[in-house]
Length: 220
Image 1: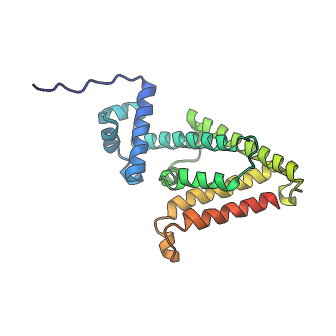
Image 2 (image 1 turned 30 degrees about the vertical axis):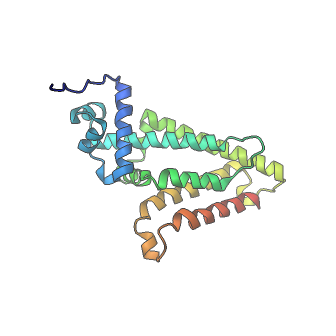
Image 3 (image 1 turned 180 degrees about the vertical axis):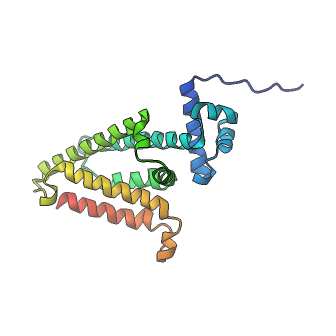
């Protein structure tokens, strides 16, 4: 008996876009940024090449949508980790380790580097999803500043002159961590070898050093 064709799955436009982006992220994680082609993603999604063009127009727009999707997911996860829990101290080392693992080690850093190098800065914010990313970054800064304020009050810590406002210290922390995370994701393929280091140096010693440096800045 001859088997018929697989039953076509009917999805809404939003469901189709979500499915395509999930397929694109799988390709990114499994094969790297260089494999992000429409044909490869279409095969992963089980869709026709023309379907991807219908929903995104071209590979650049699909990559841009993937970047904003990942950023929103990670920012929400970080915000969740920043929420105070009964009896738990603010653990900046756990937060930094999580962000490194979620972004740098996953290949998303290189995708973001492609975006920064090939697209104007305004492109991300022009998207509806980009505005949501911008809002989440602002919320992340606000939440981190609140945790710093709580820590200062609990420990009677006197803020340093250069960061008298907790919002300024929160901004500095975010700039340093985000820059380090994306920089690590970009150079990790060759920098350890050039420095004569083990491949795990950045994932362990460097993350420990960065976390301890930030913790010292917050605590002393």
